[in-house]
Length: 403
Ligand SMILES: Nc1nc2c(ncn2[C@@H]2O[C@H](COP(=O)(O)OP(=O)(O)OP(=O)(O)O)[C@@H](O)[C@H]2O)c(=O)[nH]1
Ligand SMILES: [Mg+2]
Image 1 (cartoon, protein in one colour):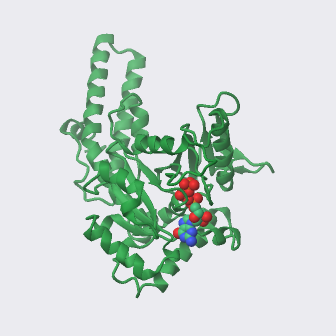
Image 2 (cartoon, helix red, strand yellow):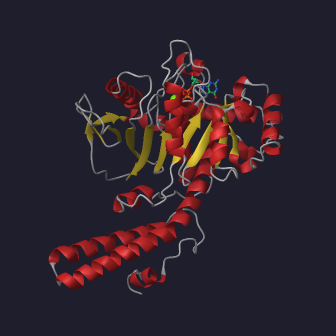
Image 3 (spheres, helix red, strand yellow):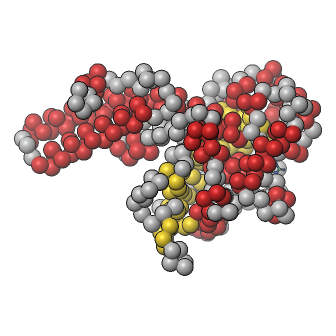
């Protein structure tokens, strides 16, 4: 099996046309880079929360196709921002040398701006992601007086062909019953981190519970319910379905709808890799995706009371896609307005300074960016043609060439 096969992702399947969905071009990062100081711009991200060991990192792996540290006990100890970035099939801008001096264009870059010494940025191969996150987690812990969790984030950008541009944030799990020897400051610090990451209203919350849990007693339910009573930006994801009686899964599903009024389209059941899948069967992520599909296929009669759309990580990825599309639509008028203001400021500066070369350059750069952004928005996201309408000024400004 090639590295490429191994790294194929659920997202890849869903966005490369298997389900008729067009590839979504995510411009959030680009937009953010153009407005670095504009903290009010509501650019969405996806944040995973839930109790310790409930399968948060395993779920992110299944969605992204990127291996992360996982296992029993406290594994994720610092916030991990996983930025998936699609690179062009044919031309890639940068390459990385492997130990045997091969050049590869798919790679991962870890950024740890908080490091006092050592490499603040380091490149790894795609099959080294788990090791890389472990290495930098240890650095964060060491720098933070060796406490068990640290707030210092690891930013991991994955440059990869055939992926969706998407940012997912993994967090340490909520500690329910701290042990005698556990770090007493950890439970509160973790809750503080969770609140920090999910409180902004543009954040999509992936709230992970395991099938055996009673939602009534879950802290993550309380956190997301407080922030999002209408369940507009929270997806409830039940892991470890394979460890539970199907009848109890069904009653759980019904309870979520009747007692908590969670909309059906925001409830999901998934099957990640188990401890044995990882350590005995050495199961790849690709295989894990197949295993999940087989599981739901095998149990489809018993699970028929649960709508098909609630089952499996492919459907979950589809729902994420939908939510991001909605967020992008909401964001567009705001961006248009900001770009317009920027453009006016540049025009004014140009008048004041005459035709100075530098200003002309700046303006044409901005024009190019705007042209590209609107062009890409209009081409992107299997959307009706009128989804992305530009402010009138921009419609005139960016008339298609030759019209
Ligand atoms: N059987 C089964 N095991 C699972 C499933 N999801 C996760 N696991 C196992 O549960 C353990 C914990 O998984 P992680 O993904 O590390 O959980 P986490 O929530 O990220 O844990 P922390 O980062 O420590 O909070 C691992 O041994 C996984 O293999 C699942 O759907 N079924
Ligand atoms: Mg984890």
